[in-house]
Image (cartoon, rainbow over all chains, first blue to last red; front, side, top):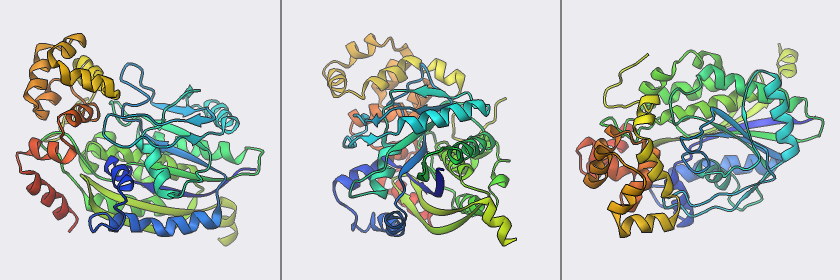
Length: 286
Length: 112
């Protein structure tokens, strides 16, 4: 049986891609951010997940506004990155796990999520930067990318993204192969790139979100999308990817590590690591 | 249902429809060859994508607020801004009427 061992949330700001290419890890501006990954590296080296399910949003590499799915699941054995027009170096490709993808697709559709299936999908910096941050030496596990629309309104709700994550979690639990899975949510936290409110950052709200992810994620599902735009910034809505990641984890989680740093580029940068504690264990402890 | 947030344009169906030609052109800038073609002849390139007069003026002005007003989405506009050598902090400064240094300081201050 596939087993979700934990979840990781991380920012995916494009400037990180350039900083990695230029090896700025010890630069005073970047160090507070990059040093937040040491604990993640140690955990990944110990736990060695076999596969990663990555919830993220495309920024106009794979999808354009002509056809924009609310939720899309990759079903390929390889996912390439290409020129995004943002001056980030093109990343290496990630391997996929098509049989696992199809298992997830079959189960989430049966569960009521009418997702788009993609046998070809380019992955943009929202996937490649987190993978580069988590496995800087390479050796990425195969991935199943799940794209969530955070670009064009109407966006799926916080509750819906949380439920999608739960559905993916149930699907993983029924996968017959013995796999250790890590779930990843990328983007955020608070930031806004556009408009007179550009540069908006909300430390208080970010902290609340990070705290509630382990304590009471359902409380976060009550925020509407306009409220999220107001509190997290127009692009802070990428937190939807984190909600899906959290949904895929069990009822209780343990926060193993947190790093929060303002600013990286225009963004409040966060890295969170959760250990998954299955429901059964929680019952036993009660 | 509209929800007004100061200094923020929700990129909804109306904006997406209004900005389609502009965003479609910006999407083409994923290709280095297209970026080069734009640099070589901006007028011809904009004409090829059928930009509205308002959009053409906005591109000419290099003014991000004007580009948003014309329906541009910031993720797509970032690809255009890159051609002009502007990163997200440059465009943040431009939209807020600050110097880039002051804008960077504002971001740092948000962490305190």
